[in-house]
Image (tube, rainbow, N blue to C red; front, top):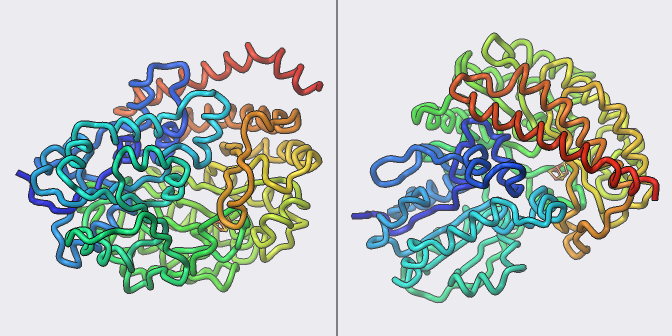
Length: 506
Ligand code: SF4
């Protein structure tokens, strides 16, 4: 017998800890390539341990925040693993579903979809989940379905499925300030709006953001929200900047450790801007943060940063030797031999950088963007920070010269350990009225960039797997699976070489 009136859940690609390796989760953004879908799914998103009610040991952080807000407000709410929803059908009145990429329209899913012509795993898995007997039964019983998360906008492109599946409300934006009111309305059988957009003015204050009640996937904890850089293609930038106090971060890390998670991922759009002076990193808050976090997780705890900006990495190191200090004095030891982070290159053309992301290089001018990128890559390489970097192809103001410049300048990054993932432009942020960039728009210059990224990433992925990644004995099958996948990609690229070269000569 279930006891929760509000059940939060999502499909398997999200409800997983990806073997404790966040990066493996990215495989769910592509279709299965070279191996059966079941094996691909298992590598990207294995099942997570649950208790007898089906509550997962770890769950996506955003859903944990909503769960905490509802519990704090006195509701009977819980996150339930998608395989255990049926246990709660008798008590459930509201089913809340969150996702980062419901329909695979976000980057890089849309790119893999466009290139391979096959639906990515996350889309296949989400559709399968929505058509599952438990979700259909819930709807038949009159359960109100509310969906949200960073990919809420994607429902506007899938109106047919929205109606077919009986989704009552889509919520787009930070929900803390509005969610209690919406849930009360839903429980009282009042009409709900179809789509709720929560603008920056309704962003919650620090006090309105709750502390999570259960563990987040791989120990992710938020250290700040918002970003001051204002890149035109980004939606985060519209939100105000808020720093989460150290005490609150510590509380959340302890929630995770108590649940058995063995580390922390510090989440921010730019970890080095925690407590910064505008866009200039300051030593004191960052050192206090890393001192506290590494003491909490202990010397064996794994640590990662979700995102950092390349300009902040360069500034922090060149002005304060801060990157090397943090890495040498707090992060690196015999157990923690590297630190992973996502960074955004987006383009190597200063002309385009000036137009679409004029402040991404701040406090340096955008005209120096390729130098900033290389300096930051060198600093990371020297300090055992391994970036997964993104590039965006097909930005609205992009010219062939910009793409050619990106291809040429990418050679400067060859010596630095990293993975570089090119993504096709997806209209978001201030550019959301622009056209999608699809396979048909790809030019020889784009192919040149795609191939350079592929060669760079394969070379360094092998090095990373050999020296740093998936070293735990129980991860041997995953490690072998990944090695096999890399071999397959190399073989495929070799086979396609004549066609690729012909395209480049066009
Ligand atoms: S730096 Fe990153 S998070 Fe900030 S606005 Fe640019 S893309 Fe968005």
